[in-house]
Length: 408
Image 1 (cartoon, rainbow, N blue to C red):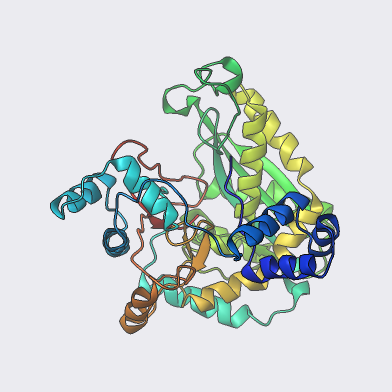
Image 2: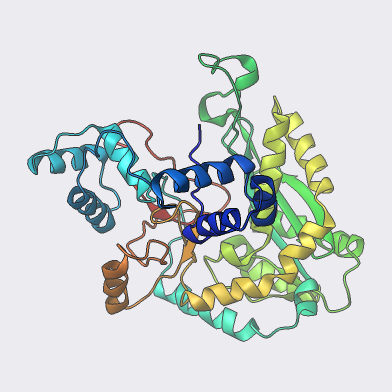
């Protein structure tokens, strides 16, 4: 049975006061929003022990002393990649013999949880400066300006790849039942490359790129799909086109083609997928496609087109009207990617800032024991990669890593 939350001492004292005032258990429960059975239990304890405090509970003492818990917490804090085996050995040298399961339970009670490394774009100083410049220049742009932007990008979707996480409910030893599995083949069973665009008014065109894309093919895609998308989306005069700094996009021929067509192009900072709201749509698309479980490339393409067309215009609008938050995040993090700390000091993911001074970091770590909800600024793992859902996998065996950093 799940452990219930204890009532506050003030609430328990109020129950006793109302009981002494002559109120019934039902009336007390309704007034304070507490179950009648709970009210009765508190009154009986008060009559027997003359107190509303929690009484000592039976049970075996903890295997790890408070001092040992502090040592574990300190070790994991300094090196988030410490394994349970390492912690078992550390305690054994200190005279305490425990199992890995005990280590896991202790870490969980401290709000620490194992999680996998996420891949993020590798940022150089020039990228950081460009991101800061972009965010500061556009921070005060009105919402209407962002609503008049067509956002674009490419993404790859695997046929049987891990496009999204899927969970099932099942009985013991039923893991391999067809209803509880997703078919897989080596190398993902094939994939398709997609180019798409959207604006605050909804999704634009989505097309499959059947060959390896080069500059000429990219310009052909734009010539056949960009203007038709703008017409369907009913973009206002002077609308702006956004694409990233892929070499095909920034080639001289592509720039000249865009200039001759009189397209306004949004100047874009490199390595900034977090600033492109279409990344959110790609994730939503991959989740929807994975739920339908296509069995071949043809079905995969058809389902992608169907699900893209179903994306609600309200979702698209919300991604755009909140764009200022993305810029604020870049400025707050001094141009770095906004780190997301996954359950290292809190059961829930929290944002943390990077680029802080050493003094700030030391002050945080010194206060960590008392303030577990603080936002840490510790070491983070950065692996150069794109941002189209290619997420690193963590170990789940005996030597699983405790509390890794990364971007979700």
